[in-house]
Length: 372
Image (cartoon, rainbow, N blue to C red; front, side, top):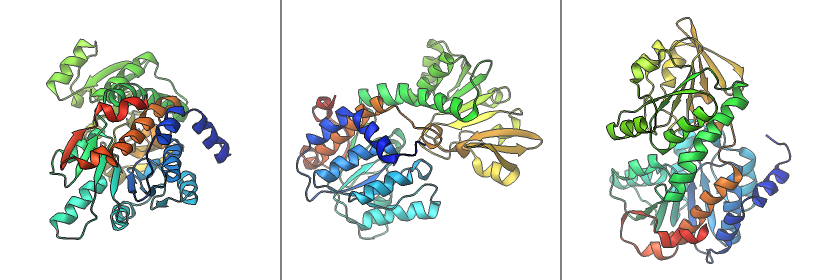
């Protein structure tokens, strides 16, 4: 990381004009207590600083302990935010952060993964006291999948499925930033490598397209028949995962589901296979199996080498979200669009959206389009 944090922050802010404009358009936020469960990297700082400047009280937790930048959290606390998050916090500490966020008595939630909403609804079912939430935002497909399985006690607005979020971040930036991080981390390219992309949602589509652009021989593993057909129409060989892992040089998970790469897959991979995850869920790969059955070394930063049954498997970032754990994630100019929409969404949940009935809604176009 560049050592001059303030200079890096100034550079990020300079290249995020849409975010600055969107934040300046927010109403007075005095009286709003916003608990945020999200990635806490440098690109989030301009938004949080802007919210604080509008009078909002902010509590910061993370949706992924491996993507936290401690200097960013310290900076935002210095600016007035409350936080319970640090890089590589344990699962117990991470779970505790959800309880601390809810005990802070927020009025609104801004989430990536629905951890706070899930914990709140668990507390309701157990008869525990919970804060009176007015409205919330959710930014990820994984979070939306969790919310679809519950009856929210307040209106929650989904902005993951907006065209600008799907078409920009999900479809293009995750794949591009994943392979850029691969090159920087391993000092290798994808030339002459067979890359198996698991999952052909929008993220998987971008991962596959970027891999081909960088010289890979791409195959797609997809359980959903419709998405599998789409992959075939896009020109990709659609393969059976159990067979494909035997000959893959690089395996990329992009599903947002648990246990996609299991022990059987790991056992049949060839020596030298690289495995990486770009989905929101850190448990797409059976990392506990490797830790329990393989010796471990770290030949390069973020390259975890596991010697399993006489072969070496390279698990990048130990299975966590690779492009943001080992790299910088989206470019500043691309994430500027994402963050501006997020700021507009916050404006909606403290304004008109607060009057909606309990339930899950798509963030209306009237709330975000002006942010572009």
